[in-house]
Length: 389
Image (cartoon, rainbow, N blue to C red; front, side):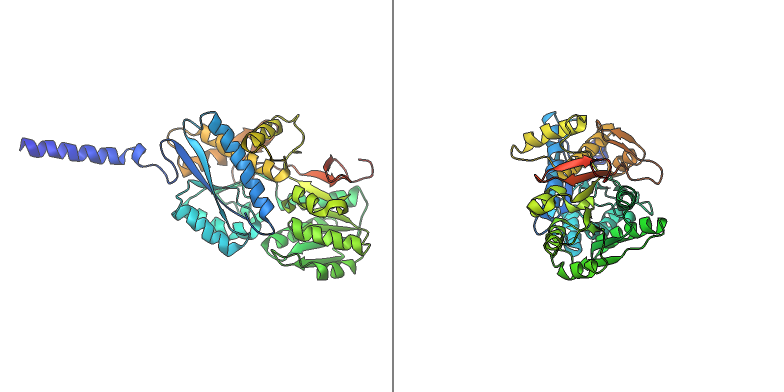
């Protein structure tokens, strides 16, 4: 009887240990690390976007890891290529959740890919943090597992139309957009901004995702004789359009949305880039007087001595820093629900980049900045598109 009682005590002791928090960790969380996942374009025509976001997140994680991690846990990132295609993004997201057992998804790239992957993460209760898209569906209606860092496409396109009509007094505006969820999100934003001013687009053209087939779009857009062309696409097709437009002497101002991948666009354009406008949703990455940008420079070089500062990797860095700041605020063991809780109603000042989240507001930043490509291929921040500003 004594032996049986002793055995029973041992049995219940084992049960108690098995049920303790140390043995009930969330996927991706162990005693010494937390693993995050990223489904993004690492190859193909949009590769610079995925690679830039990855580079920035890795720089932030490495910076934290050098300081001992977050509460003793090192941060890791597993990135899987989705080629900027929705079906591949679904597959990559499922692999990250089911095979890699990641804690949360960070820095996914693209509107059509996010539209495909986000519902999978929502069903699993997995945080979907810092998507590289300003699409409205990730903001309205409110999605509790989504944490947006950047301003929305509606905010960017409003700024574009405001500057074109106010600074340059233009009234003939056209649009080029990618024929998918991303392009249509940008189109909706432009139309909203135009309707607000009782204006209509003079012409519009489209192209297919992951192609540079923009010639027919150019012919269609040129018929409207636009003073400006708003461009909703990534760097390769947008650069091809601008170069062809220059060749046929189309005299228009070309205005790109932040998703374009600014540094990659300037590189693709070469000498044809002078005067091209890009709206931005992060501080100027060359301005080291901003504390978070100075920290980004240092972290980027520490992670990769050959890395060059840029808008996309800075956004990735800000996403990484936000994750680190949120993890640091957690009480007790890290859980997905707890991470979302501290992110959903917190204020974060990363040193010149302030993010505010609240009830039904899952977007941290609202600022939109203007930049113009100079003759040397570098970007210049401007306050206005008027001459000399």
